[in-house]
Amino acid sequence: MFTSLRSRLWLSYVLVITIALSIVAIVMLIFLIRNPFASREIQQRLRTTQSLIIATPQKFIDHPNSLQEITQTYNVRTLVFNSARQLIFDSNPNIPPLPFPRRNLLGRNVQTARDGNGEVWLYTFKRLSTDRILVIAAPRPRVPALNIFTDQLLLPIVEGGLIAFLFSLVLAFALSRWVADPLQQVVVAARNYPEGSEEMQPIPPRGPHEVQDLARAFNSMVERVESSQKSQRDFVADVSHELKTPLTSIQGFAQAILDGTADTPEARKQAAQIIYEESGRMHRLALDLLDLARLEAGTADLKMSSVDLSALLNNIVEKFKRQAQKNGVNLEVNIPEHLPALIGDGDRLAQVFTNLLDNALKFTPPNGHVTVNAIQAGAEMEISITDTGIGVPREALSCLFDRFYQVDTSRAGGETAAMRHGAGLGLAIAQEIVQAHDGRINVRSEVGRGTTFVIHLPLAV
Image (tube, rainbow, N blue to C red; front, side, top):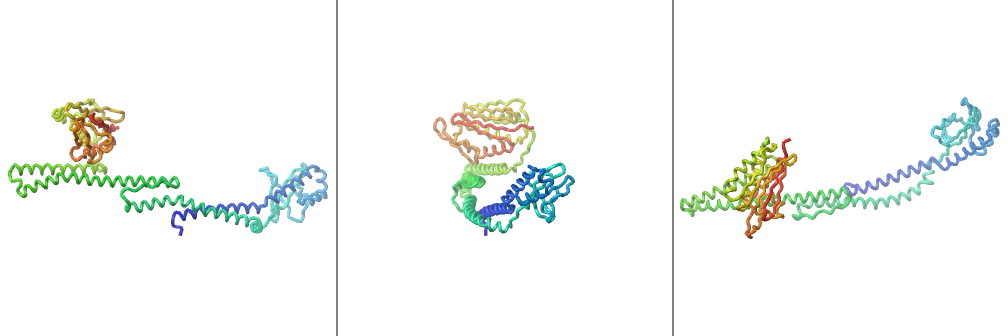
């Protein structure tokens, strides 16, 4: 019982209302026990009696009968003290006397005092002369608490409490549903998600702000899960596709050797060569996949040290000059002689620049240009590799660093070429290497006009 959030919320709201009503009842009871209406009437009699005596003090100071008479008229008790705090007159000498009045530090009109029997008196005092102090007192009214509760408080509390209780039940039910229903919706969606369709409809945010945040966080989590699942499916499909072609070739030519179809030395040599090349392709694919997995998991062994970026880039460009001449591409280099050192893995950074420069040369037509620039931009180095090649469509730029992603774009002459080299893992690996160095890599491109890759790497501190 009361194990669900909705029932507990409902019960908590009811308890809050009950406690609030109880506090109101207690305050009313205390108020009535103190009987402020009767107290005010007594205070008025005390002040009136005091005013009459002060108006003609000589008439009362030396005439006890006059004091006794006015005391009986207003039903109060009159006491007179001298300057030595001795009681010299008491209109009710048969009951315990009251103590000498305390100084009125709080400026109250009427103070309280207890006699020898513990009875509480309301009193007011005034100095009549240098040797006379007048005290007017009356017992504080007392009303039995049980009578007050039964005669004056019970019925309105029961009526008001019943109305408030019924209203609180309705309000508590509405509030508990307002909070609990959206949470229950999230629970049901989470429980049924593996059994549902591949793409789950987002949960509409409802209820309190915190519950809406929970619904949005759940929707975001589902999107990430679905994206991850789709990425895994695509990854398996891409790997299967990449392995299918070399395996088919290896199997086919191995079968040709086995069944004697390749019956000449030249045919057997050709079959062996193809088997060797395709197995090498599979080996490179496996190494790239392993390399990418380690980089994404953060377990790649990066040998960080001071890197002379100027020497590193010049060495890479020197290796590609012959390929650029062979392709008829003009390779330009704008690298200052002395660049600030940065901390990184020189071999991994060389892998990034080699991949980007190799792609730029492969997809730049004859008489095109490939430019390598390096400048210091604040606290980081900015390296850019620009080509005047076939370019990448705008809609494909966001996916360019995905694993196995391939781009088909139209040349100016209308023929179609696939922007693909190897297994399509080079850019994905390059991005992971740059991010492992706390850097970033961006790309901008326009079909028919070329592509620019920009790498930002932090300088050594």
